Image (cartoon, rainbow, N blue to C red; front, top):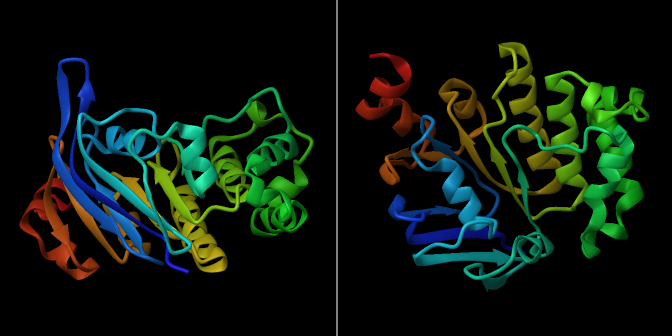
Length: 243
């Protein structure tokens, strides 16, 4: 059944500082949509609004989960997650003094995920063999690339319907960035996910995105209906391609 996300005329900020100015975007069922923008332009604030961490001052956020519509405005983060909307945060945000397996099991707290715990854990270890090898290792002692694998695996343990990934390339080598982005695409296909990915690395985002948006100073300055439209856009060429 359909899983989608729609943001309409969203305004949000922190105190007297306005960050988002009437922002609108949509992620339709089964799509991977890239939200492109450099630091400080509002990508993380938008994600925090979706996840219930920041309360918008105006606008709507509506998610359709398995065909049922939900208004996300006013929901607490735990309520958003219970619906099946799951975030892989920038910087991973793992529990460093817990083991790999313990971090993964904590991801299965959502009621819908508990009955699939064994299958999802087996798939995480299949998708990320390094996690299987190091299941008893403390998460805080792993490399950045391994921690990113663990953060993705923990999200999958939640049995998500909509996956939001915030800056998966931060702090990783080019080779690990490519591997991580490829894994996001693989996991999307395997689980039938709808994906919103906030990213600065334009070439890597375009490897897996169906389409995307460019955010500048809290506004959507360009909506590309395809990868080709994004690559051909003058703003994208200026910001990301140096043309």
